[in-house]
Amino acid sequence: MSRRQFRVPERADDRPLDETGCTVLHVDMDAFYASVSLRTRPELVGTPVIIGGGGRSVVLSATYEARAFGVTSAMPMGRARRLCPQARIIAPDHALYSEVSQGVMRIFESITPFVEPLSLDEAFLDVAGAVRLMGPPTVIAQMIRDRVVDEQGITCSVGVASTKFVAKLASGLAKPDGLLLVPAGEMVTFVQQLPVGALWGVGDRTEEALARLGLKTVADIAHTPRTTLTRALGEATGAHLHDLAWGRDPRRVEPVQRERSIGHERTFSADVDDPEVVRRVLLGLSDKAAARLRSHELVGRTVSIKIRFADFTTITRSRSLRDATDVSRDIYAVARELYEALGLQRARIRLVGVRVEGLSEAASTPVQVALDEPEHGWRDADRAIDRASARFGAGSVRPASLLTGESRPTARPDPDLD
Image 1 (cartoon, rainbow, N blue to C red):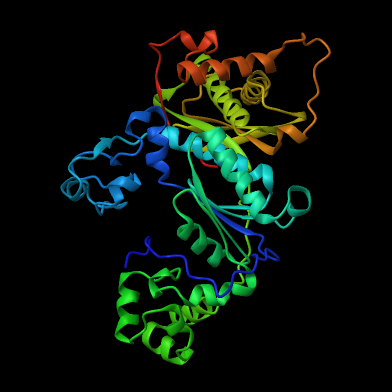
Image 2: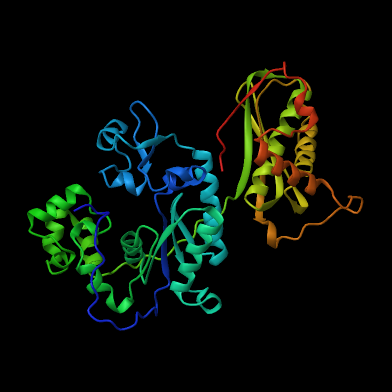
């Protein structure tokens, strides 16, 4: 049996579900990549669709209609086409997936600071601190589902339980577009009705090894001596599965820390000794760093620059501002001052970088407005540029100085090092 096709175990009685202690949520988008790709193709909703490239690529995602034909993620595209020749093939749009994922994570973070993303499309949430204000865990779970549909145009499934393992099991059983609560007092009975393939960490090989031992259900594992399991599967795997079979999972939801710095670098295609070229690149890098700060709703207090010379010698300089900022002009002003203070009039430079550190949430950080700044100042201008870039594409609005000197030495981007 496929691990995606388990049935929800039957309850022993029909008493109302008790949510006490069930403050762990596992939220998983339904066929995330396919669902996002179909937001602008409503005519394909309800039909077999496969997200993937051509040639020797693999399936990134598929709609549930395509999955009914046996198409699965990571399957070679050639095989997927043979299984479901009528499916519509759509190329992935990774930038769009990232944008929607950020929107989903912002919904989670508005509910609780205890969010542990597992991937772009799923996360654990600990809502213990939100229950008093927002209501029982299932009410919070439904609120999340409603907001994901309203704000992102896709659906998700939520598992609610007292442990991460059971919450993840429940979200899988609730798919697609469902919600399932597993009361703490019913957890062991619930888990032990499932086949062994439902346990977290049981792949095909482990499932085969368990079958050789005659173990088909989680209850079979639970009532097998731990020593027998560890002898057959290894100490770590045997002990892990035995604990899960009894619902034991002490792991807590571990929130992921925000970025501690944001920056960009440029490596020149040929070494540069013209200060004007360096200043122009610093301006572009400052502009990009500030835009990323705003997109993450962050501000920073420390600006640093990085200079790598032709002989690969590298220096950094930094300065802290009195007030945190996300304004391109402020960041560039400090970056330029740091560069000018080095006095590198004819030094041959290979790489230039700008980084903003000391980050904090923009919404909770007071921003000091300059006395001589007009009512609609540089911060408003930056946000207008952000809106234009979102509508017409990155780079559609840029500082005028970045539009000159196109014949000068170019630069190629380096990966960001956050």
